[in-house]
Amino acid sequence: MAGAVPTLFRFSRWDERIGTLRVAGEFVHTKELNGEDTIEFQCFEVPDKGDRLLWLDGSAWREHVVVRTEEPMAGLCSVYAESSLCELLDDFIEETRLAGKTAAQALAAALAPTRWSVASCDVSGTAGCVLYHVNALWALRRVAEVWGGEVEPVIAVSGGRVSSRSVRLSEQLGDWHGVRFTYGKNMAGCTRTVLEQDVYTALYGFGAGLPAVDDDGNYTGGYRRKLTFADVNGGVAWVGDDSARLVWGRWNADRTAKVHSFGTVTFSSCDDPVKLLALTRAALVEAVKPKVSYEVDVAALDGGECDLGDEVLVVDTSRFPEWRFRARVVRRVRTFGDAVLARVTIGAGQKVEYAQTATLAADVAALQDDVAGIDGNLTTAASVTVVENTVTTAIDDLDELAEVEF
Image (cartoon, rainbow, N blue to C red; front, side):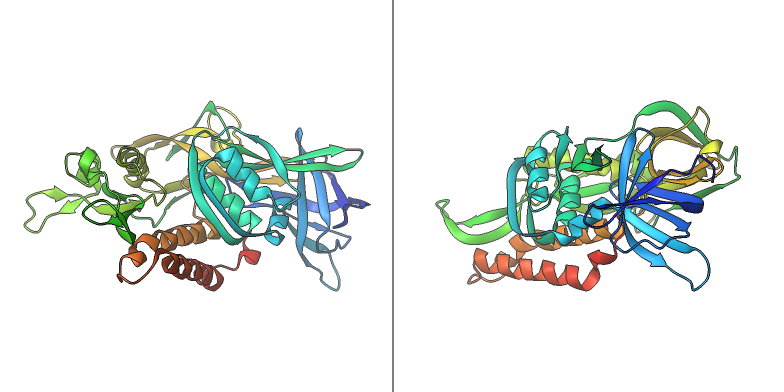
């Protein structure tokens, strides 16, 4: 086969060297930000489930684990393998409470029960969350979501085998190289998708639940209401974008004025109204944008190659007035054959199943403060138990993590 197809070094699940696995035909590598990282190909030999495939991608080593094979009685074996990060599905975290921790500390806590270490972390600031009865991969993705960062596995090789496995948490992968994509100029091989997420022109922001106190300020148990930023925002508990309102709002009852479309956002660990206001304003920047993605062959881009995470200037001439904005490469699919053909997704990516479940868990956990105030006899401890059980049940019912592609 042509030299574009990488050499796959095959190891057993116990890291014992078996040899090389020869690809028959094309080799496809799919990778997205904080999500899928898979390879698919056909071969004459049949690797075992759990075998590890090590290959050199440019200057970086990648390791994938065979999770599925299709073996016809006659013909080639089809192999589907996931990033070796998938082994974190088998490491369990009983309970870890992170409060006021740095991203590096949170990353170390998520990886504590695994054989993976922290390669580097350049995400600043402190935050908090609870990792309760979850696998280590869920915890890793949750840390990236809460602290704001992007995960990259780092595989070190020496002596012909993997010598260490670690995780790099970067504030943002990719760079800006002046690449431009014009939708409408070259329509061949291009698909535009407007995603289903709603556009909000104003957001109410809520923080941590405020403790219930008596007239003297003494804590009486439980929580009453969530923190808002009304006191530091002129008495108004929401922020809005008037420019977006004129485009994405709606008429009032008598069609005399365009009014906001309201949404809500909750930061359950935030107990500072000034910080809550800043967080809500930052969330509004994303909420006012329609979620649009463009899937395109790299050959249709002006200015050269682009990598995962890179920023690209998008000009959508099909809109009037035309849209001009910067968007990131959130997904890349490379097909190695006689040459390497790349197809990228630019803009907003669909939420992977993990992200949907993580959002659900965060929303349910945020109900803790509300539950504690329903009944005067309900204690904070009781509310914690209710929420933890609800989160666990919701995850069990709606998301089988063993089937998620990472």
